[in-house]
Image (cartoon, rainbow, N blue to C red; front, side, top):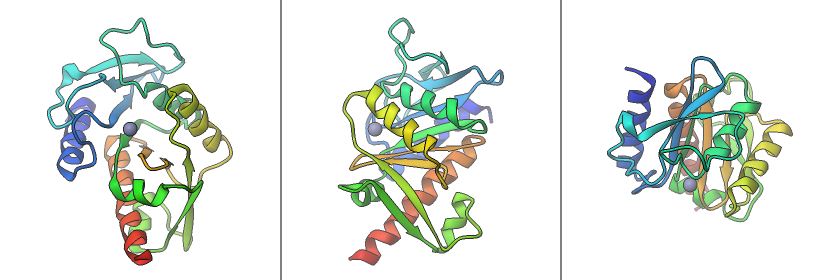
Length: 195
Ligand SMILES: [Zn+2]
């Protein structure tokens, strides 16, 4: 499968899981030259994405107003991650319900050592801290907040957005998808444990 086919397949999976309802969520993959990314177009239904629903955007860009078709409103967050995480080859954003529930009114979440913590690439610790940023409505502020938490040091391949969802990255689409699924699974266990 090509990278775009993998992104479309991930979107279909997440749509079926209820993590990308309607047009929610966005997906991208870094281009081979490393200087740009292919990101999903704004407003497309995530259960029916096709290759034509992606547009190339320079990773250095902050202003997307001249790019047609219009990339996802949250492209600035994808770029903020690609600029900081050198080995991020794909970035996925989904509205996972247990992530949204757990991240409400907090700035950090501790995920404990259930087996699936290994799905985040964590093999040597009993718990990891996941940064949570406020759910800023202005996307440049959201991108700055995500970037600042990465700059401060993250021990997991993702950042949560309070009461909203998460951004997760990986070296490729498959790894980024595995990280989204592992985060949501661990958050579900943490939520059930709390109950
Ligand atoms: Zn969102």
